[in-house]
Length: 169
Image: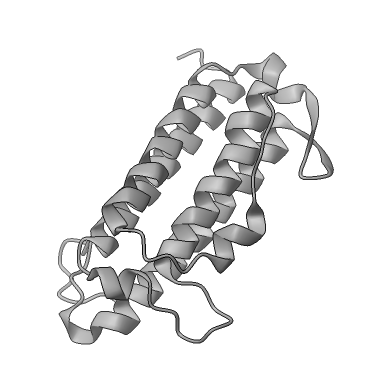
């Protein structure tokens, strides 16, 4: 097998994006529209706001950042939105953003990853930009799981239980 590190990295990133997509979808399928927009307190985010925020972040750091296109992100609105937009509409936006990010990643190679870009005021190469955004996605994925479990308590359905285990913390 003669695969370069860039290909291995980009494949791992794509798999991580897909894992987050499936995990988040599993969570939002278990909650109501009201729960989707619920905030633990006014200063914290709802799952809806988290998905809007992740869509903005991924679009800025991976899609626009790696493609060298303009970005019109309104980051404060991602957090302040309390519109109650149906969860299927926000899911569609989020999922389409992930699809576009994966298409962007599929076009990259070692040379693209080494180019320094200015994203959100930072000078970063492609590896840094992708790492920043996908680790951010993974962190918020865990937050979505936590909020879902907080809302549902014992009725939360686990996404995955390793063979031989009956429960999972």
